[in-house]
Length: 191
Image 1: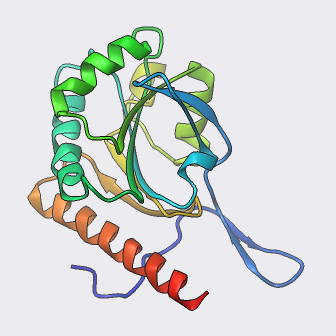
Image 2: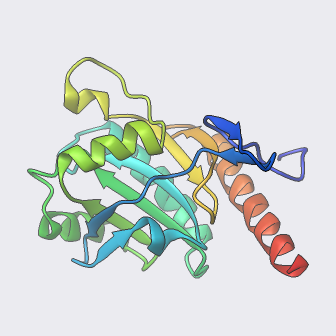
């Protein structure tokens, strides 16, 4: 359980001319989900999302991470402002049709998006938007990160977690999502 009432903002930040702190945020993008519909930064604004990077032919690491995500997805299955976005790092193999078939393994709810698009766009998002740190030297291994990135409704990174973590890690992610949802609801009430 988090002892604080808020999560930190991760990534670089600066103070603008008016003296306000400007936090790192996900840059604009336009990709395609496993349902063949566009997904953009704008379509995620107003929603909290948990991002991950995977590829459908990955034999061990990705299925383990996606099984963990699946446990979290089921906790927030009917929550319209909570989304899960799994970007493929192998878009040459992972077409929309391939991802649609892959998604069936997880009784895919409407708020879990398996995403494909140009490799350069996905890798740029991984590195510069989601601050994903991969392992290994080859490009495929580089983005083969086990990191899960929690992003608030304004596009700011608020948590980075180990995707292959144990039940304690899964509970930590669930608690972090609940905390962000509380924060979002508190902000809405102030308006």
